[in-house]
Length: 133
Image (cartoon, rainbow, N blue to C red; front, side, top):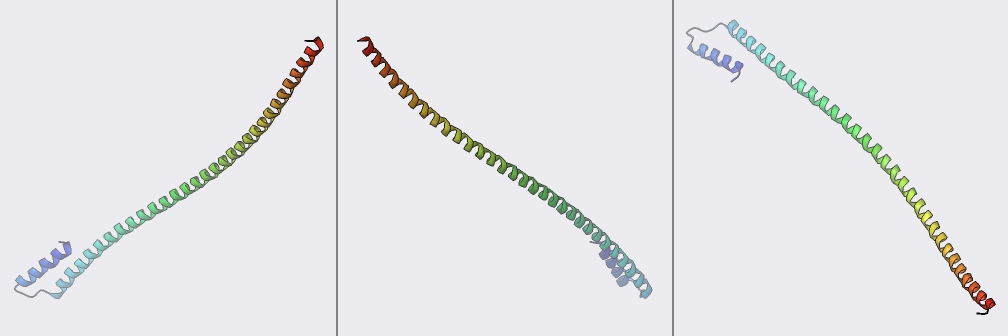
């Protein structure tokens, strides 16, 4: 039970048990005192609520700043990742081109070897003919 209710109950009990009627100025003083007490309680509740609101507002602002930092960091990370992927793709394309060039060179050299082998066989055959074998 609040202080206001206790005071009202005490005053009501006093009025019922009192053999004489209390002066209206006493009643006004008691009501004024109760009003001041209630106003103080309301002021305290208001201060607490305002403090809670300020605290929540600060926490929201902090959370917003953290979210913005995370979004910025994620965006930078995404840009960096995109650049690295593009670099790897270009490197892969360059390696594929070099591989193709090397394969072509290998095929060309194999043809040259085959041609030289044939010429070598022809020369051996000619050499045998010349020797009379």
